[in-house]
Amino acid sequence: MTELDHYPARTAMSLFLRMGGWIAIIFTVILLIVSLIGQSNFSTAQRFEAEGRDALAMVEDKYVREGRDSDGNRTYTYYFVLEFVTQRREEMAVSKTVGRAFYDTRDVGDELQIRYLSSEPSTVELEEGDYARGAAVLRWVALGFGIVWLVALWVTGRWTVEARRARRYGAVEMAEVVEVMRTNVRINNQPRFRIVWQDGQGRKGRSLLKKAHEVQGWHGRDPIRIYQGMKRSWWAGDIGDRPKG
Image (tube, rainbow, N blue to C red; front, side, top):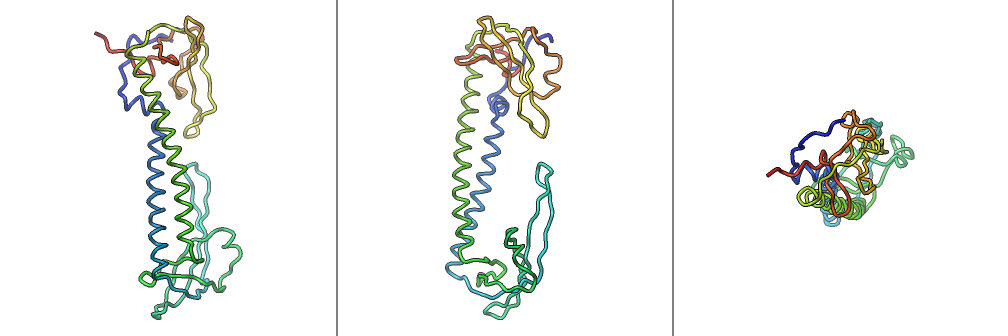
């Protein structure tokens, strides 16, 4: 394949996303969601400490809802419909999600000891401290996601800075394509590829992840333009060329 004469220089944000910065963004969203849910559970747990009331509920009905996750796999959510009477003589019927094991060991007509909020009887917990335990678990989950987020942000940010420095200050030279390598990475169930090259000093480099159509036409021994960085070389097609003039 013939190398283009000039690739437009990519912005810092464009490079950041191409380096995998979208992973850091996804983890940012997940971290925010987990933190919000954890805070909500913590607030509800505090309310149960202040105004939780005990009641005997009957399993009036049980059912399963089927859905699909982002990968198309089937998911199942299990529900009990609980009927109980509050201390204020309010008759309540509340749908409550439960785990698979708990669902399988209880039948319609069984009685369960539950707790509910005096000011909001539709909010119940099947065991005392359910919301507090949930909040504690989510705090650890948020901590784990936070660590992964920091690592992803640091790695992709460092790569972005290195690529920009190579484009601005690094030596530009022609290398030779060694192979187009199919990786083990799949995104949306589609494989990703890398162009592998070797420069004049025998050092190998590789492109960022590419879709199949982006590497069509590239073959071994094709010339490819690269910028030499401090630790590795970068393909001009990935990072753009140095502005002329």
